[in-house]
Image: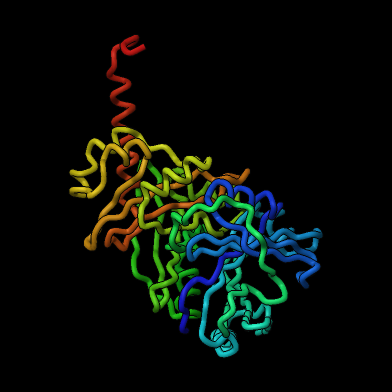
Length: 363
């Protein structure tokens, strides 16, 4: 299965215009396309957002029966479609059906003045579908005849984010291996990493699968229900089942990206100050001003191939489910699992320091 990369991500949301306002004003996406009943998209309103090589399609149903409306009713706003680029949609769709996939939409061609786009869909994991996309011609139309170009009203700022680095998916207990097999059997993904993460009485299993091209990476997380409930359990409860927990967006300058998004209103998860006390002893020398990482709350981890810098934005959704991660890779191929334990230990040091402080000192 020749998957070139992620073509776009489609989110089902309660209000596409409201969601687009956040992504454009706070994260810096440009509204570059729109569609609805007047363009042949029956029963829905969609807005296409672009930033660097990242494309997000926000879709709201205009009736209770539309799939987007049913998705939002159950899960809240979230990622419902992962669209991947292939050389031949018809051949890939037939191959997927032969491998046991359930077809949703057979190959459909949309033709414009100077471009042709072929799409098809199959069922995926949880309530997330896989969309196959094939693009022909020199035109830049996203979906001819359905999504028309829009005049952006966003500020003209250079993009600070480059591309989609990975998706992180939470699955219910007992479904991790089944989901890994789903990607392996249908799309020829390979498992490239696995570990068990334990901290503060919580536990989770993690496996990472990746396409042969290396351009599509999915981090799979499963809670250990024999341990104390944690963030994966909270996601599964609030999301009413498995799904995409966060979208990792790669940047070439995480300090600049965090500063830019912070000025625009994005709020990031806080990091205990004591996390940085032992940082270089844990990961080695960092080629970045440590005081700026501390001020911004940027995390650092390392593996055999290098370092990575990352930070997590607070969820913008009422259920506190889907959120964004910014990640800068300096050779590292991992996903920062070392930071989970380091953050916990830093918090413990802070609490111990507070407990040891004489009452009234510093008040």
